[in-house]
Amino acid sequence: MTQQSIELIKATPHCGAEVRGIDLAQPLDDATVAAIERALSEHSVLFFRDQSLAPEQQKALGRHFGKLHLHPAFPDILDGHPEIMVIRADENSKRIAGEDWHSDVSCDPEPPLGSILYMQEVPTTGGDTLFASMYAAYDALSAPMRGFLSGLTALYDGEATYRGRYEGMKSSDKPYPVSEHPVVRTHPLSGRQALFVNRIFTKRIVQVAARESDALLEMLFRHIETPEFQCRFRWAPGSVAFWDNRCTQHHALWDYFPQRRRGLRVTIQGERPYFRA
Ligand code: SIN
Image (cartoon, rainbow, N blue to C red; front, side, top):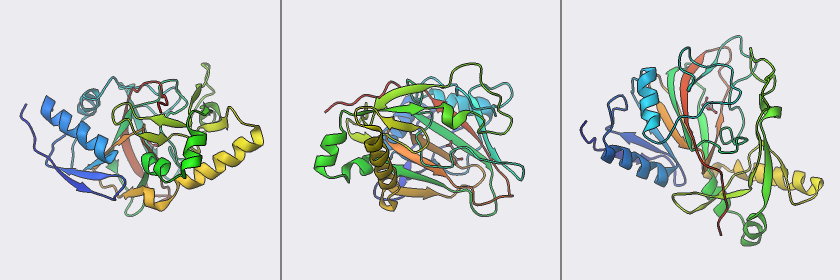
């Protein structure tokens, strides 16, 4: 284990950086792990090129940052590796995973800290992923709106999203997760506030009337899509993206049908979101 010195190339002012000079398949020493954690904290999503990861290596990589999360409902799991989701689309797909703005599995009582997606096969063009900084989204709101939202909570529901959504998915005999989380969450490391509501999972703001909740959520979902908060990652075979699920949202583009795209994702367990003024 030797310390790997890394170079960072920022993608956009608000989020994303490409990390150079690191081989993620090698065992990482504590200093290199700490450097990746610092870079993630500063840029919210990290991109790595030209990697070659066996499933055990990808799991070992994820475990440097926490215990691995098991998805409550995703049907396409790599054989023999319950911690690895197969993210794929081809000519037979009816839907793809993550095809709208979201924070992964934010319906869980303890939503993931982050996800590491390793891409293996890409279309000739297309299949990019958009990422957006939820710090930037929160900071861009007016002070009265920030004050109003802070302390509100919302229901994040997995059933509407997962039931019958994916090819081959059976109706689950265990309940889909539903959780109440803050609309604005405080990042446990940076202490910064991030907008947490998202189009895939957030169904209802608890403290206001249903019509008010619908209008507020629609306003926030549109606000989150502001291009200035975003970066866009163009994948190649061997690309890896590591995103902080607590302060970003992402949106997978499906503009390449009927071509194929395939990657493997490990997800890192997180903690219950909270808001601290
Ligand atoms: C996801 O994990 O939400 C899908 C991301 C992607 O396929 O780019």
